[in-house]
Length: 260
Image 1 (cartoon, one colour):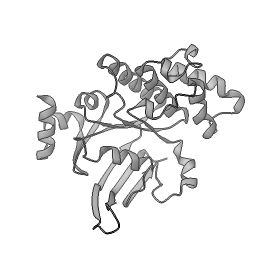
Image 2 (cartoon, rainbow, N blue to C red):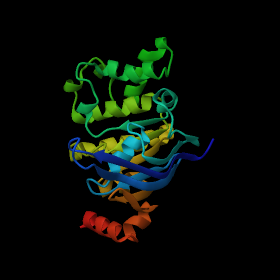
Image 3 (spheres, helix red, strand yellow):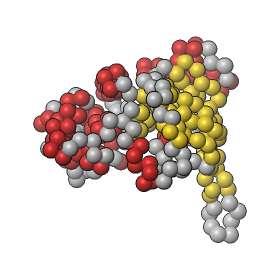
């Protein structure tokens, strides 16, 4: 098995915008020929200002949107051109933790039902083992079994974020894309969630792509940092070197703004 968990080669995404049938079409280049790889067990931080293309990259990696050009490899398998049906085999290997829990967690489903859903879809365990697996997932993310019959509205923001994490690891995913996973939380809770993610990374040998605008998060979580600007990766380097001596002018400006 390749020690490269995720590899991206010349990945691009453009959107064609047309106000009406008579207007001239406009092409928006959201992501432009980016390339990077993430080793198994590594955490890569993707930083940049709003509109730099970070979330588009997240959606491309999960194949929630299709790339215009380029290639995505997951553990050495080219998944770029796979149909939705063929991609189902690999979806269990790569999952995402979103920023806003209310956009993902159905308020009409109990916590137990929300955790059973990925287990059943991906057939992770036998049916008779699902209840025990739900309990195991709750324990892994630091929640009591007593929470499983509650609804998301009955839990705190931090607890709901733990449910999102539990859903992501439920499939036995090896690559987790974390899209601003703590930015919507109180500062007092952010550290708890980040420490949980570090704990799970070690226990489950996870690989992270951490998308954030918060330099403190990547400093705490990531081995390397990639800086995005206007849809391009302008510099990629190990975290310590990037923070102390960025080379690209935009990276210098961005990191200086974070540190002042």
